Length: 101
Image (cartoon, rainbow, N blue to C red):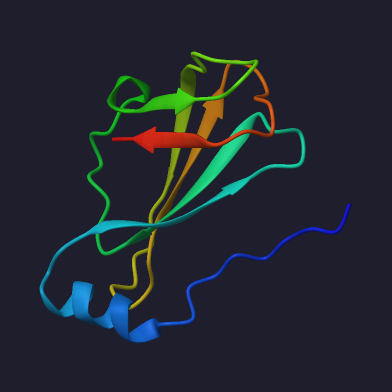
């Protein structure tokens, strides 16, 4: 299976969000073992986030994935974006899932 690279080709969108002093999710990467999600953010990340702030919905055969851990990867440089690593209780299937914050 060939890995697929899904990236935003519109850097202007990120600049608009930063200029308005807003924040949000940019994109999510799934680890090879499917047990962690790297959530890339635009703008500042609230430092008081907890696993309970996240919900994963969807899945065909494997449902009700739970976020059991969270690591903040904060950038000190305001021109760089921070990210989060979410650890889940088990691997999902290959059907669509939606991450809710």
